[in-house]
Length: 323
Image (tube, rainbow, N blue to C red; front, top):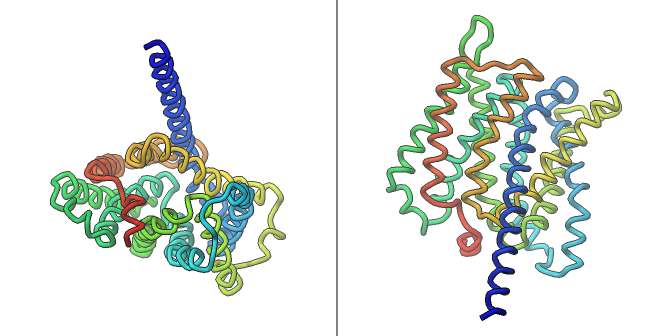
């Protein structure tokens, strides 16, 4: 009995350590993912959307290389042409998302955009239903129906009541670009499930970051200014590098640790805290303020997103493998 008791105590300590590790990782991602819109909003003064995304993703790609090489040395799935082809598919909506999210910040503030992006949970759920037939029963659940309705109403209200002096509404172009940004992110989130299930998070992100950078390169030559890093100060370039390493590379690795230790559903739910950090930082740095109508809309959006997420986890690795 005594050895068994020791083994039970050891297992409990190990489980508690894993939970602590998972919670530390997820709260780190909550903080980090409160920052991207602030970084991009600042960089918009110096970089056009094409150059900003190309260089941010190129830096993120370089930063993930040591992790990829470390995993390859440990063995595991091979990175062959089929794996690369799998990763190519989600890169298209990822490129669209990266460009449109930067463009959206010309119309709305970073705090408002961070709130608005929580509506991507709704779009991800809807797209998952289309891609994974075995999960379509979810649409009959009242939590999903009510959550979707509240989320879409709240998302529209948050950006529609953006204050621009006497004009109380966002331009329709900004509204369209913002919706396209979160829809593309949701589509990317669904399409990335299959390569992630096959290769693992780090390998798949390493390939996706490389392909995304390669796709952004010709777009930058055509529509942007490829020589921007040579024209801005070292301080601005340092901000770009920090944003890429933390918000793209480090956050992906930490989020992978979080979902491994505490599960996808809880890790995703805690991401709803991101707008609080973004709003506080944006109010402090950029003096962004929300109107009463926006605050009410934000509450409706977050409640709706929470309800929709309570119905099920997004497409799991098992369902992704069966596509």
